[in-house]
Image 1: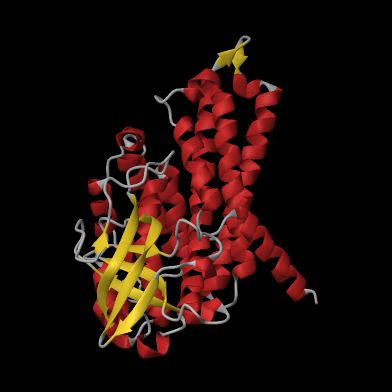
Image 2: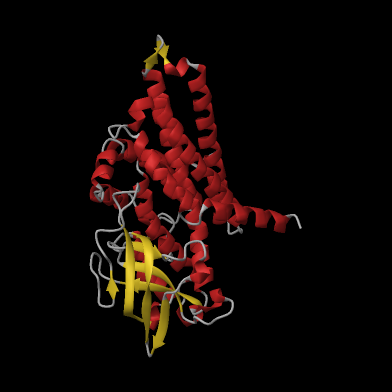
Length: 389
């Protein structure tokens, strides 16, 4: 994998930040479920929240492939950091691609500077991968919409200043996706405005701690008609807009998987060199070497698949097949490497004093987020059949 000089410099800067500020304290913060304010501030100072936002709107104007490389490094240190970044990344991508010029000018510079944090709200208690079965509605009332419904698993939901929300503006539409509309919901961070309740503390989780995952309970919440993503032309286009967000989000989740897979490999290699059993380091035992070989191959293959998907998407080509492959393989690699890392550490891997148990708890979310891996396999198969028809 060949990087440009700019990409090499950026990756090196992020890697230095991760090794210096993240790796030494991530497990402590994760166990305390503490939001990493200082780390997020450093990410802001580095301009990471504006990575893919065009320079004319205050961002760095870099490609999705560079963003994926950044996410890999952040996730190698702590996958929560890339989750915090992802909310703003998806919002900025959707607004850049589908928003009106007024929406771009209003929101993109503030997302790039992290004046605004964002969350992505599509999932409901009964509607995960089956997006068309959502029940949240948005009814037109003069110059406003009244939103009613309940969303689940909203990362950054409490701290965000805007929420990218998918709702049904025509619940009777056939097919259902033609009656869905996207909204840019504005709110004050860490507040529950009239008509919107955000129960805190957030939903309890196995891993992925340090950032809140919340419910959003809308009960006649009023938002101006101007908050429709894409303006009046965006009414009924929400499903398409949100699926485009999910597609780039899958590259993000794949990159997170690469980071976790690499972190697990790094820790396993270091421990295998240090741990002595039967008179020599366990790295010299064939059974351990076989595990290390598989871990390294998974991590590298996941990296290549993810960068290829990101580059293809960044070039403007359709990349749902490549993004699905990358998300599927990289997240499975993260899960398998996390378990192998724990096994190589033996009893120490089960201890909360070392990192393997954190990888083991963080990895399963990646199998589910941005479309389960079962859905990814269906997408891959369908696109293959289309291409070979």
